[in-house]
Image 1 (cartoon, rainbow, N blue to C red):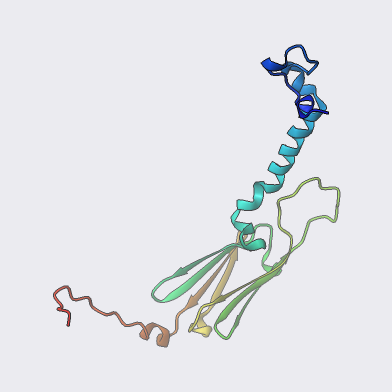
Image 2: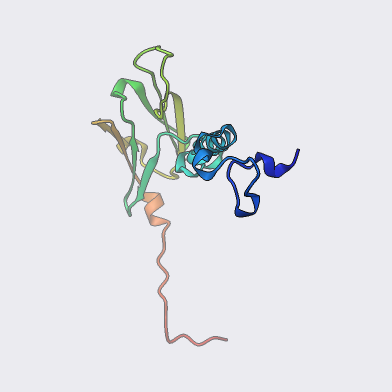
Amino acid sequence: MNVHDLVPWSRSSDRGRNLPAAQDAATSPLFTLHREMNRLFDDVFRGFDSPALRGGHVTWPQLEVQDADSEYRVTAELPGLEEKDVEVLLEDGVLILRGEKRAETEDRSRAFSERVYGRFERRLALGDIDEDRLQARFRNGVLTVIAPKSEQSQSRVKRIPINAGMTSH
C-alpha cells in the first residue's frame, strides 16, 4: 500500500486516482482520528503552564507575604473553608498553616472539576518575631496572620550610608 493512499485529500497530481476529495476530508475516518488526537493532546497539556502545577505538585493555598519594618503580614485565600477548618501554629520561628477542604458530597459522578480538596500544610520561616503579639484573623475565606517582629530583630538591621564622594584605594 502506498502512503499517499492514506492521505484524506486529493492533490492536483493525483487526479484520476480514487482518493477522497477535500470536501470529503472532514468525514474521513483518518482525518477524524487525526483531529481527535490533536484535541486529546491539547486537553492533556493545557494545564501544565499554570502556576499551581509548577514543580509537579499543587501548592495550595497560595500565599501573599508582606515584610514591613515592624511586622510580617501573611494572607492566604481559603475559599470554601471556615475558621474551624484551619489551624495556625508557630514552631521555632516557623509559621504553620494547615487544614483540610472537604468535598460537599461524596458523589463520584463528577465529569470534571478544577477544585482542590484534601489536607494542606504551608510552612514559612519568619525568623525572630514577638510570639506574644501574634494575631490571626479569618474573614470571608481569607486568613490574615500578623506577626510583629521582635525588638531584637528590628535592631539587627543597620543601614549603611552610601558616600558618592568616596575614593577607592
